[in-house]
Length: 378
Image (cartoon, rainbow, N blue to C red):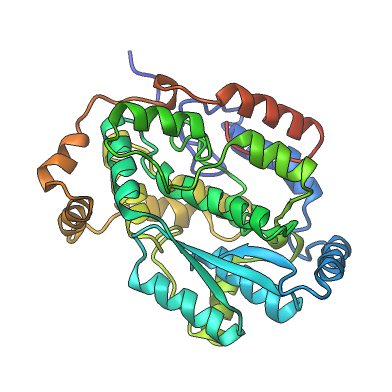
């Protein structure tokens, strides 16, 4: 007998998240975790000026006499774009700005990235990932049967960020992660930890055909323990320390830079757009808009009714999805039929391959105990 379908009475998370738990009022554990662990400690309306300027002063003091005082990764999405604007124009910081070209940039993202860096007068460092290795690794993930086939791109971005911090000895990394639009995280079964190098290597070993000689790699022990506790590298979620509202941020970027917004979060990347809107939705029944919209519901940026109206539509453009899929296939060097064959492959999860999950579990438990991490994957 199939489990009964249920949707949260407060947000729009539902039983497509198999680990979801509802209380006696039908409110899900995502909402209850937010209300218990995040909301009481986060000043959404005003930010935390004292903590913000304490950190900014430390960054500026460290950066005296240096070319840069912090590190900032720029995707062209709303969060990283607003963060760059605010850090430079409002706080007077001098970030080393880097962008990862994994081969899937959209014209819109290229425009947004270059427009912002030019108007803000900052130098952009672009790292281009070896395409042959990237394509082979992405195909390996297709063949593995798991949902999280965008891991190669995300892993490359994480690894490059930490490598930049290590190479340039910059202890402050500004990240666009935030509670305002991301207080609910994708469940592990939807999107497993992208930085798990053991799983990446296992899937590549089983299904890849080319050695990973140039592909940037990281691992949890290096970036969660060695860099922060030995090298003193800090990840700073600056958007949590300032008033940050998605629509207001978009308006500011449009007015100041002629920013062009995307139809949905993460749609600045062609492959990610296809993967999140089509692959996860049609193959696994996972609609990532539930996570994104639920975050906005909890932070008062959209009504539940409006979110339900959005969810009543498909997350992808029906008129162009075949063309998009054909482009994915052509760029990866395979046929349209091969890509579609992966849509009906036996479904696998992160549990079917080697992983560092036990290390992540211990790290998460310690971080929550110390109050470093609130919410997070589960």
